[in-house]
Length: 94
Image 1 (cartoon, rainbow, N blue to C red):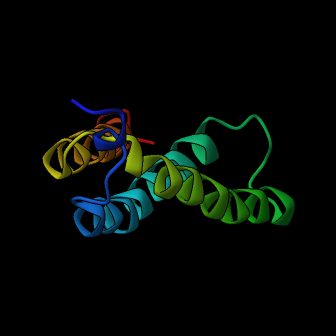
Image 2 (spheres, one colour; image 1 turned 180 degrees about the vertical axis):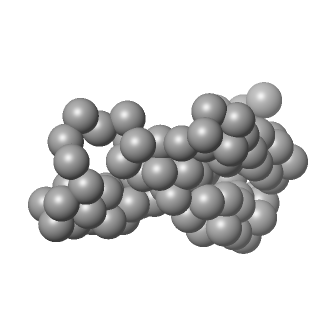
């Protein structure tokens, strides 16, 4: 592999769409878990914190989705993490 072959734009649309769709679901799941595990009562400040937590988590996932080697890896990893988050919320009764 030539040094210039490591950084290509191949598959960027699939990776970006995985980051957009599954990154959003992952951000919602992380926010849901943290809202239930928070020791604070569900007052307005806690609700606002959880609401505004979604955007930074989503942007981190969207930025990091281009680090996957293939589009399939991006979809599988982000989909699995999103499923685990929602499974934790469902099973734990959160």
